[in-house]
Structure formats: C-alpha cells, structure tokens
Image 1 (cartoon, rainbow over the protein chains, first blue to last red):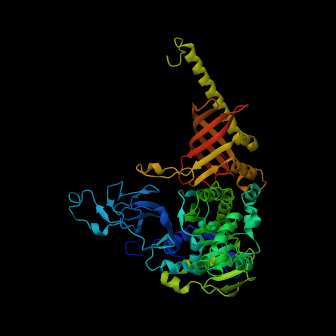
Image 2 (cartoon, one colour; image 1 turned 90 degrees about the vertical axis):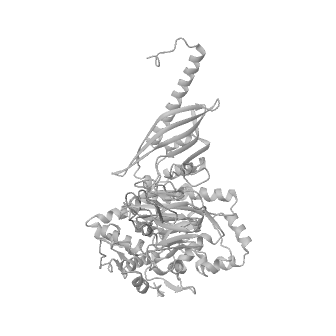
Length: 453
Length: 186
C-alpha cells in the first residue's frame, strides 16, 4: 500500500499453517469466529485481492456512481469526465466523513456534508471553504485528494479494483479459471445488468457462504422444499455423477455439473443457430456458441458449475446472476445479488430472466431462503468452547480422483459430487494469510496440482 | 365537539353517503384484519384462497439515494424485486410451506401482522384501493427478531363472501434488508 496509509495495528498471526489439515481434510473452525483473524483477512485478503466493483452497464453516464466495498472499506465507483471508471475511498481527507451517503446515483462532484470540502469525479480536492481566510492559503490541497484504489481494470466489462500496487495485472490474477468464470457470463453475447441489486445481511462468516457456493451436496437436502414447490427440476440440474471441478491459482475455482464429453461432441456439430433453438425449446439449458470454446477452454466450456472469483464473487445460473459476499465482521456477511440479461433479449426473454432471478436467490428466493440459517449456525457453533475445537470435515472424495492440467493451465477433475473446490479454497486462504506481501504470495502460492487428488 | 357531533343539518343524501363510506371502511378493515390473522395463525391455504387469480404480489427493492435522485428510490415493475409473484408463484411458496422440509420455517416463526392507517378509495363498483401501513414482527428460533415496517398499496375486489386481493404492492422501509431471509408473507 502507498504511504497514505498507516501500518496495520494488528500483527499477522504466524501460526496459520496448521489451520487446514490438508492430509485429512479437516478444518479448524475457529477461522469462522476469530476476530483477530478477521482483521488479518481484511488486510491480507481483501486489501490485496482484485475486488469486483461494477459491470460497465451499471454506470452508463458521466457522473454515475455506485457504492461498493473492498473488505469493509467503502468505495465510490464513478464514471469520471473522461468516461474512465474511478474507484475512490469514500472518506473525506479532513475528518474522515463519508462523502457519498447514497447507494447509487449521479453526481457532478462529491461535497462533504461536514465542512464542505469538494472533490471532483477523479477525486481531486477542488474546493476548501475558507481556504484563504481560515487556512491562510497554507494547505497542501494538491495532495489531499481522495485516496484511490491502487489499480482499476476491467475484463469483459467487469470492473475490479485492488488497494495493493504490487498485485499482478487483473488478467494474470484471474488466470484461466477466473477468466472462464467471467466468460460464463459473457459467452452467449453482450450483456447488461438489470436494474436492482438485492442486498441482505446474514449473521454468518463470509467464508462459510463462499464454501457453500461450491457445495452441490447440500442442494438435494437443504433445498428439498424448493424442489417440492416446483421451482426446480433437480434431476435436470444436479447431475451428481457428472461433475467437473476446475482449480486455478490464487484460489479461483469452478465446481458443479458438466456436459459429458460425448454430449459436447454432439453440440460441437451444431451451428450457433441450432444451439440457440435447442436452448429456447428446452428452457433449462443455455448452450454456448462455438466461440465459447476458445475463451473457456476445451474442458471449461463444458462446465455448468459455480465459479468463485477469489475471494468472494460467485457466478451462478450459468452466468445469469452473480453474488458478492461482503464481510461485515467475523459474524456477519452482506449478500449482494446482481442480475444480467443479454442485450439483444426480446421482452419475453428478459421477463423470463427476471422472473427466474427474483424467485430463486435473494432473501425471498425459494432456494436461498433455506441457506441463511445453515450458514449462521455453522458460524455460531464455532464460538462454543468445546464445539469450536471440533474440526469441519471436508474429506469427501479426497484421494479418489485425478486432476489433469488442460492446455490453458487449469486443473480439471471429472468426478461425482465432491469437496475438492472447498479444500482448494481453504488451502488458498492459508496461502494468502501466510504470505507477507504480494511478492511472497506470487512466489509461494500453491500451484495447481497434477495426478491423484 | 362539532366534528364528532352528527350533522343534523346535512341532507339525508349526504348522511347516507357518509354511512356507506363508513360501512365500506369497516368491511375493508375487518377483511384485512382477518386476512392478517390467517398468516399469524399459519393458515396459509385459507389465506391463499383470498388472493385473486390475477394477483400481483410485489415488493420492489428500495435504495438510499440523494434527494436529487429520489426517482430512483424504488426499482420499477420489470426490474429486480424482492417479491414479484403471480398466483402460480405464490402457490409455490405455499407448496414450500407444506413440503415437510421447509427449513426456513421449521421450527415455524412467530409472526404478528399489524395493519393500520387504512385509507381507502373506491375505484369502481366492485373494486377498491387500500393504502395502509404495516408492521410485520417476526420472532425466530430463540432470539432472532425481525421488524419489517412499510406501506402497502392493496387493491381489493368484491366477491360473494367479501373481498379478494388482486394487488399487493409492498414498499418496505429498508434498503439493505437486515434479515437472514423473507420466509414470511406480507
């Protein structure tokens, strides 16, 4: 981080190494309740990572802004006068007041409601009331602009920001698996965000919510009532014996159902038009066009699973929706749901997307209603003196599968329902928490394994 | 005193009109109270029967905006919403309640639906619009408390037995929903 910032008050813990017992697939569940570890996560994970900010379609005009977070740091994501996306820390350089108090909107500049300091859309301090009479013109105005994210970049229209100038480029950070996860949203053509982000708060640790997105084991049981209600045809969706896991560097992973190779070979013989027709007739599947294979990889193109862009961006419904898990202390997480639609969708298609999105996820979603309490209780039991010492069991299918590297560098496992991606996620978490800085992380993060896994 | 004293000087027509208004107000209020009680008593099937076949049950997302951008405060019909149900989708929520595996409501929540500030407007002979404030209190497990407060724009249609609801638009007074879920009905 630049010298704008003081050193962290909490010194990192050195004894992270044993938190996940990789050999036995057992996890020290105190990582879901320890407040010091949480502060360390804010510095070493959210402070270093590329964090999702906005999709470009959310800020079409100069001055449009959307408030997002990097860890617990609130940032103003705004399109400046040159049409560039800026990511500015939402805190006045004078007394720290939040400049922007709305969740979204349009602004010409950001004026602090405390003493009236005024910042332009690039974060430059352009107005100080009483500069001459009270400050006697003795203030370093040029250096009191808003603090900015160290880097802002986009991939396929998705903007990310990092506070760490040493972070690799967004492209390299995402790697093959992260990029495949984003292509899942764009492979079928140009998209735009639908108006409205559902936000709610669940009293759980953010990591248990991330763990759950890889978890196709819970679907049949946790979401049994949604199946009974007729929301989903679970057999059409789950394919428990046709599962694919893709593992990427820095913790990115994709896990879930996949199109079997033989079926993909048939799809490969279809024209894009035929694929579209098939998808529209079937209703439950959206076949990707031929161009997707080059982007997502020979194997990745078959995935119908759930990507997580490390640390906290979940892509779901084959790219129709994505969700941020924003940390709010060790015991609380905000869930933000974003919905995408093809730019060329007919009004009927658009309606169908919105209808399905509204009824599946979000606090009233027939599926997601049943998740929150599981996560809350999985987090809360970690507070018990005795129960907190019992480890989480993550050993499903461990040692029973083979991982091969595809030619783009992603590790691919074809298997049944499993817990590979969760193990990978906690291993990566450990790498991030042990690394002293990005240089250390770049060098010492685990590489995608090969062979038995 | 004059405001509450019957206006003996007014014409019989005016008095009759006033009486009709009072009766309608009373009927609508009694209907809303009885409907709310069905939800609190977990008689979901009976409640569902009061929803019209053309019901639009909708809760838009609300956003904190500046006064200048207040037109963006609520998402619009066709945008993303918390609830956007027709009769079929409401029916799915009912099936979920009755599925035997509705974990978000098993153990069942304790709810209390408070409905007040009821202002009605006759739309046609058989339909009426009803604006009201609501307070839905939910107590879950042993210590989880939710207080959902807001405004509703209902529309009711006369039936043989009373009324049915063909519009329930719910404007909640929260932006980031401070709750694990919305497993209750409003």
